[in-house]
Length: 568
Image 1 (cartoon, helix red, strand yellow):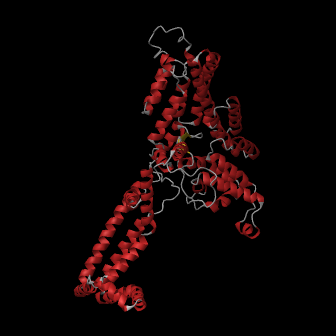
Image 2: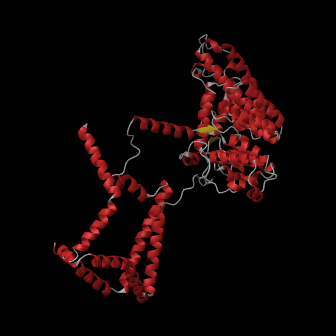
Image 3: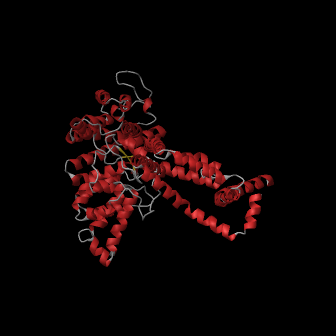
């Protein structure tokens, strides 16, 4: 242990010497070379080199500078390609990964003790949780909205990754572990055990529908749903048809009402049997998810068809009946509907309940709170007047709320200020990401426009996405949002990136070097004599301070000392 401690101390001393004493070593070597200039015949060698350089023609300098420009240009192209593909500089990465350990750099990624190991694990878990993909509570209908967009524009608004996540959600919400024990098909007239015998309506998801949710082809899913309805009144079959086959919201609402009739019967039966065993409890949990999904989509249909008050009542009743199902984020649907009614007092009451530090934040929560506070001062707010008299308490609260919202999701202001075009929101969003900003602005832009002066107040934050000077109210902005958003958003959309990536130093350096050497090559080719005079003047000016220092040193030190040193 003592020997290991001594070695660690010796290593740390060597690292310290390389880090802080390299300048001393450098000047010492220069001083030594200067003392030994006579034995090493440095002056004679310099004279020979200068004579050789004087015999060179301007064509040599043109070729030299041209070659330097070509090499630096190739390095610039490679650095730019590497930066665009991997988001970092190749030279910087090699320097950090390979040269830094050789020079005694400390690898911060290696934990030195158990505490740092636990801290790294916590930070990694935090990063994973922040980059979790969430179901969009305001997602559109595939048949009535997404498919209509495809028919008109020829573009696919949903990515395969997004639709695959939706398929997984449907299998999670609409299935349970006991589904495999149900009859595979009503045509298989098999005799079932007594615990499986049940009215057909109790099975909201037949095995045919289990296969339908896994199908990639939309027509195959729709055909499977029709086949399931031929067997029994299957609630999830109506859900699939309402989501994907219905071409209008009116048709979707009719199918959801049929699904509600079947789903309520299943829910009542499973509610009575939920305490009879684990399998019944799982079935009741599945039936609850189906019923909540149907009612929520019916409320969204009412909202889209203009029956906003009816939609608000349905959402309130649903939240009161199932208060623990927060995974559906029904309160965000309620906030949007209340803003449409301009019921700002009710909006504030909902925010007071859900804008809590223990709950995961969202752009809807943060920006709606900012909108309400901006509404109180935006109609009379003037930047010039505020700069003269200072901000009032209400104006300060509005600015703080906007700061908080922009810090949570810095992509939203560009869409609210119409600095960037909107697209259809995806079915899944990444909190604090560009996908969440699109989903929020798509539904809430009209509410910001309705409040006079709110967008003018938000306009002061138009320089997003750049790092904020004020904030730190949330966890550090996760670095995984860009990758996840590119998977969620279609390829024709330019993903917003925060913080905005600055060009690495070596790209700027090689670009300047390439341009400078190319300019020197051109000037040397056009004006060889003038460039020769300029080069001599530049070199003499460059070495003038060194010659001045050497003359002062020779005048201070006695000649006998110089004579003894040169003899050594």
